[in-house]
Every structure is written in structure tokens, then in C-alpha cells.
Length: 99
Length: 377
Image (cartoon, rainbow over all chains, first blue to last red; front, side):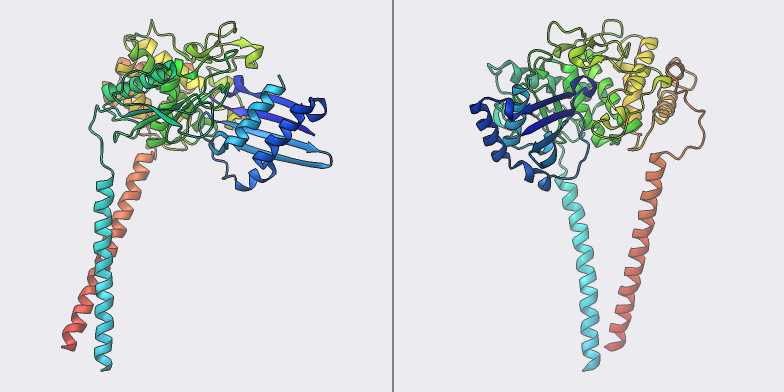
């Protein structure tokens, strides 16, 4: 599975844009299990269905998460305004692992 | 029998109309009473700790008048909210963000290594920074002033967060964010740094800040910040970007450099404390702007306001004209522009007319009912 995370927006977007990619094949066994757990906790595929329409809010971050899982591909977009605790953990974890 | 039935139905209809009118009056009275204003000069700050999570607001850690916390972020946020409240209250007699004494709430320690601060429409949110690129976002009073000014704009011009109106929204936040800092530190035009975010850059970065109003485009040049500061200071260098999240909604944080620099040039020309003259012109203009306003609208209105506040042809009005001309947005001579205020006046007038018409027709119906009743008895 390949997950890419793109962060836009923020207090000064030109200096705050970040992109990172995590490939589960290159993860250690415990990390791969942790990723699996985080993904299940977020119910990621379902996130967008609950998302409110995009209203630009000054200085907030927006995140675009692309998931490629074998033949399955999907994209999730979320901003700080709609952030759940579980999704926030996933984003923080992805940023750490891709460093 | 039939006539009695008719009579009863008419009476009921009249009573329903009357009770609806009374209810409308009552609701208006209640609405008026709800909008209770906290007394001017009374700060009402509340700081919460999000404890590195994303659930807002988090745990209450310091309320108004409480002694300082052992947590520097809590105290910095508390003091920054206070500095911003004082600035708007002392200089413009504005009683908090909504001018009705709105509570100022803030959450610190939001998420982990979170490189940002934002106003979510109701409260402020601060991250701790990752320590590599950014420090704790509570450390810069201009950043706090910037965010809270988004709230002031939301309650005044409500500038639409796209393209030029979005860049004006950002610029207004930088202007007053910087003035909050200058007032807090009692700095004049010369001693102020005119930087936004100077206090939150981690050591070792090739960056003095995130934005410079004095010299847009010069704040940083560092690969960790995506290269060089891209802000223009002249309309010829306006950066066209798509109106998407990815394109910063048309480069609202980039093109804000142009009105930012216009403000700086006016302040520099006038000297002294920037909030005293340039600040008043900008605040008065903010209250007259409208959601779709463009750079030229702010240029025209500030020119007009400077004439009203300081006199036509005054040094202040001349400084406004020179500054906007220098950044490539020369104010237009005062023509009969349809400003939002006059549009608003027209709308109010028309709703008043409609209300009057409605009242007249209700009165007519009541008279008719009365006449029918009289004819029946």
C-alpha cells in the first residue's frame, strides 16, 4: 500500500507546503501493523462522505491523502476544521515515518 | 348561521394576523436583548490546553484574572490576546472582535509538531511548532494580532477569501497584527521591524520572518521554506495563481504584499506612531469595505477617508495617494461610485418601504374586517 500526504494552506502557504509518501512495503513489520491500525481507526474511505463543503478558512491547513492499495485507489481531502482525533494521529504518523 | 360562521372565520384570521405581528415585535425585542454587550474595556480571555490532541477547545487552564500558569505558551497566548484586545479598544474604541465584548478563547498545544496558528471562526488555535523550522506560534504577538484580526474582518468587511479580496483580507490582518506589536512595544515607524512572524522562526533558518511589509519579497530564502519569499510589492508583479486550496485561493498570502507595502509607505511618509494616522485610515476603510472589494477599492476608500479625517489635500491624503501610486494602484478621482454603504442604504430603504407597504395592507385588511363585523352586528 502506498499513501501520499500533501499539506497546503496555513499561516504562510508558500513556506508551509509539505508532501510525503509512505510505502507499506518498506515499513518494518510493527510499523506496517501500526499503519493498518491507524487506517482502521480513521475509517479513511468514509471520511469524505461526512465532510462539509469546502469553505476557505483563513490560515488553516488542508490535507490531501492519496491511497493506492493494490487495484484500489481513493483520495481523501480534509482541513483542520474537520479534523478528527484518529485522522490527526494518522497524519502525524505519516509525517514522522516519511522523514 | 352561515353569516355567523363567516364572521368567526374572519375574526380568527384577524386575530392570527395580530398575534403574528405581536410575535414579530417580541422576537425583535428578544433579539435586541440577546446581543448584550460586555462593557467596553473588559477583557474576557480563556486559555485551553489541547494537550497535543486535535479536539477543541481542550482543558481550561487559565481564565480572565487568573494568576500566570507554569506553562509559557499559556501565558504568551493570554498576553497576546490581551495586547490585541487593548490595541483595538484603546485606539479604535472597538470592544473586542465583534465590538460587543466577545470572549477571546484560545487553545495552545494543538496537535503534535504543529507548524501553524489559525482562527477557526470562534477561537484561536496555536501549534507548538516542530522546533526545526518553527517555534511555538504563541511567541509572536503579531501572529496573534493577525489571527484575531481575521475575526474583526469577519465581523466588518467580511472580505471573501479568494484572489484580490482574499489578499486584502490577509493584508488587513498583517497591518493590524503589526500595529498590535508596535503599540504593545511602543514603537514608532522607524523602530518597528514591519515583519510578520519574526518571533516564530527557529534558529539556523535563513529567514528573518515570514513576511516583510517594509520590503516584501525579502523575508526569507531557505529550501526548508520552499525557497525565496515570493511576495510582490508592485501591481506589475502580481502573482496569478488558481483559486484553489493548492493555489492559496489565488495567492492570498502572496499578493497581500502589495497592500501591505502601501500601508508601510504611508506610515513611513507620515512618521511617528503608525497606528495614529495610517492605522485610523485603514480601520475606517475596513468598516466601509465589502466582501468582493478589490485593491483599487481599498485605494479609493483610504484616499476618501484620509480626506474626511484629515482634510482634502492634507499631508495624510497626499501620503495615501503617493503610496498607492507607487505600488501601482493609483486611487481614482472621486466619481459617483456605488459603494457597498450606499448599496446597503438602498437595500435598507427598500426593505423599509416593503415593511411600510406590508403594514399599510395589514391596516387595510383590519379596517375591512372591522367594517364587515360592523355590518354583521
